Length: 428
Image 1: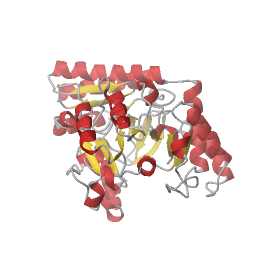
Image 2: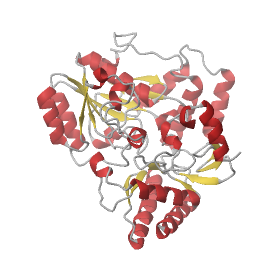
Image 3: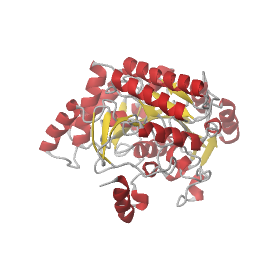
Image 4: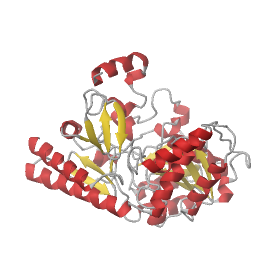
């Protein structure tokens, strides 16, 4: 069936035809894709096209699609049972690997998604501090829980209203306990804590922001947030759902030289399955039930098949770290985009951090916050996106997301991406 036919079928039984809004292509226009298979760096569409995939399931597929080491581990685990709702030895194995990867982690709780991990982290921070208010950065996306959809990035931003207060269905009473400041603006954080410091339970931040496009932290920003939060008795939550194990084996926070009180992890550590985690020092984590009074639970948490996939991925990343090679390939792609755009006179430039990058439809880099990112020409980005798609490369269907280079992307893939970008920009 064609994508149009599949989309018509989907719209009849699924709201908007998709199970996650950004898949609908509303930000770039056109009919959304339907994928039938993937292998390595490539995905195959329902109409038989093969594309180089730079979405990588929004960063989860760091080893590429259907990596043999993962599929074999999953098959073996599934043969023994797919879920029990009872503890399994594999949960311990995975938790031990996560704790061993960073001195910031002494204890972890496995959950099913990044949203769940952040919900748990926020509830934990409130339970530990006895305070209600959460401070977040404008444009950072921390999942779809009510309080954190206030001024969020990612698909919320491209959905149209930007959720400046709270999205429809989110009680304003909940939203009032979320304060918003610009990302990379330490002075704004200082002002917020000066006004509300004794009410703030935690400040939550994506260390390297990935939901307003790729926006790295400026020098001293994260350390400053840590200092300001702790001075007021608040906690620092680093949302590393995208960052953890993305740039190194372990946490980005360790690289940045900061010591967040609570860390959330997802995507990479799930091995392509619904799995995420929240971690901290033992003293904080023991506030969670059944040790403490902060309740959190999940029937499928620590699912044995997901855990097997996660362990397989982490074993590869530790034994044969692909990070330097991935970063070098991402650099080649962004350099090619920027040089081609400059030659073509097209106001589009790519901003990169290590293995992730975003082509912003503007020539005014660097991007440091949401206000600057929103100056990007969404219509021009949409044309660039469709030009790349027509040439066999799948970039993120949103200006406010990041693209990924995985360990499965080859030199030939990189050359093809660079060639497609050059041709697209010359056409524009």
